Image (cartoon, rainbow, N blue to C red):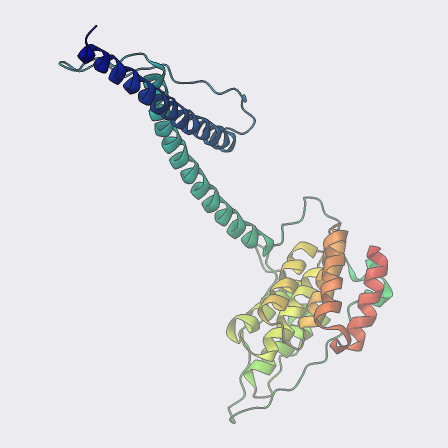
Length: 319
């Protein structure tokens, strides 16, 4: 063998020795990428498919060779590269799906929170066949007490005005006996339209003409919603419903007065009577919640009669 042949053989051996570590390093790098991607894929799968099978299955669809393209060999490096490409593609798709699912979940949570807040504001109607509530069925401490009308200063002198024709009972045909009772109630004519309207509703309620009192008091609330008389009228409207054996409507009237006029002169009364109405409906837990809110919001600022009646009502409801 010549010296030239020996030199070529030595060079080939050196090339093989240098290439082998490089191939091994490349295999190790691709293997690390595969291990990392497989771990990430499993993590994404656990998020997208919670409770699914823990086994991960590799895709078996290989890319087709295009005309004129040489098919790649099935060497370990080529297989690992194909696995890495497939894993990267799947990981990208699953990541996008996860982000979309998270966005939809956030939107659903916002909609549910808005729906829950709206439903919390409403008082569900009473169940059919609820027992009628009359003044005689209430304990002495909770018996309706007359609400003394509060005089309101007159801004300007106006001619005396009277309310519209006294409301009649909401029946198909006017009852002559009922109309006679309504006519017996004197219509105030002090010259203060707002005060006269409330006083007339108060007199109808005192005469136990509850449907007529309800119609008159609703007129006061609708016509002067921001006045102190609206607070008195809305609270007395709830009392009229309660005395008329309609605790579900009474609870709504009391709640609206407390919600719309929390600083009104009759807001503490309405909150206390709302608890009474809820107790009549058999919703003792909600009634106790109303009594607790009365203590937290008004406390010692509540009138003495409200605190006394609330204590009796809480004892009755077992709060």
